[in-house]
Amino acid sequence: MSSLLAWLRGPRTWFEDVEAAVQRMAEAEERSQHLLRSWLSSEQLANYDTSGHFVVVCSDIGKRYRILKGRVFNIQELDAGGREYCTWCFAPDRVATGDVNLAQKIALENFENRALRIANRCSASTPHSERPSVPRSWMRWC
View 1 (tube, rainbow, N blue to C red):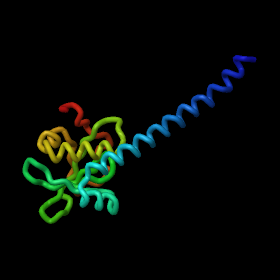
View 2 (view 1 turned 60 degrees about the horizontal axis):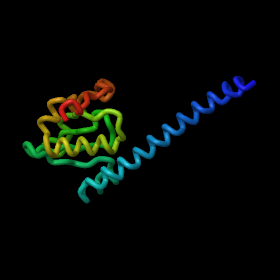
View 3 (view 1 turned 120 degrees about the vertical axis):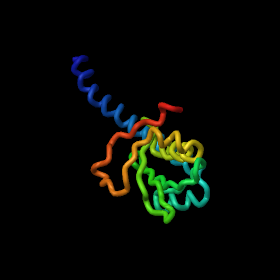
View 4 (view 1 turned 45 degrees about the horizontal axis):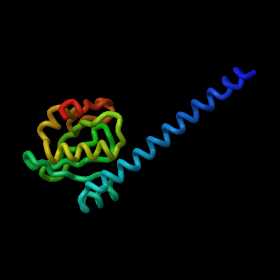
């Protein structure tokens, strides 16, 4: 009888574990968004709140990049007119979206060339369906 009760509790325990993991991920996402927002300038924060992206100006040669909320191919290199020239992707593995976007911001503002050396690149005309789904991690050179 006790083994039957243990078996019956097993699936419930598994679901409770999944529920707890989902809760932890939601809490991590909330914390990461709070941290990202604390690093954004007032102009970047306004753009992020209204449009879901912010623009960074890089240290190496002054290029401008639009970082969209997301993880994969969410960095748009902008031309002089502010239009998307190409799309880049590099991201740390297994972290919340806000942490990904903050890492991208810090990397581009401080060591753009090193970040782009390991990034995946697509032209602005490449359809999203043809872009790789898994980014190379920038963690290799940190």
